[in-house]
Image 1 (cartoon, one colour):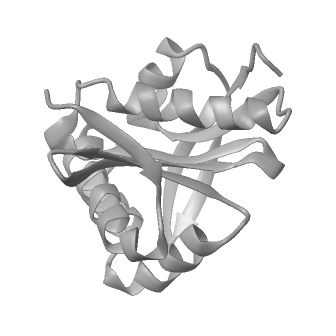
Image 2 (cartoon, rainbow, N blue to C red):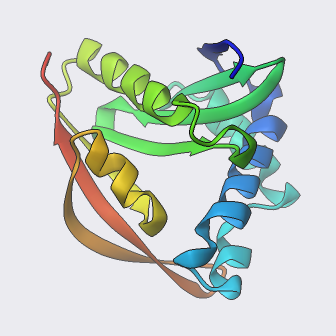
Length: 162
């Protein structure tokens, strides 16, 4: 494993963020979701402008994890809503601790904003990961994406420092 560096994303990083999300969904979620669900959920290039706007927005904190000069993962915090919006690691970097580090950095930023509890809408294949970080399962939620129902787990964790 190479050294991983974390930094704030800029709108110019949107294509790399989109590529990480697409790869993570397509290569890791297959045991929990159908091909139809994965096709609907994995973003395509049409979503690039949405990623650029979200990264440039004051509403979100978007962190990139970089290893060997490439984007290895990213995480998104919406502190005002008390929610981690996303945490994805490229499958080529799975098992390297990048996801745990990303979530830890997002939690620290939330604590700095006096957030005392974080929620996350997690993919079903990520529930064990979040449980290992102290999150608990509250409920499930079905979202309709491009006409396809996709089930997610609603998870939460109280933050210690807030």
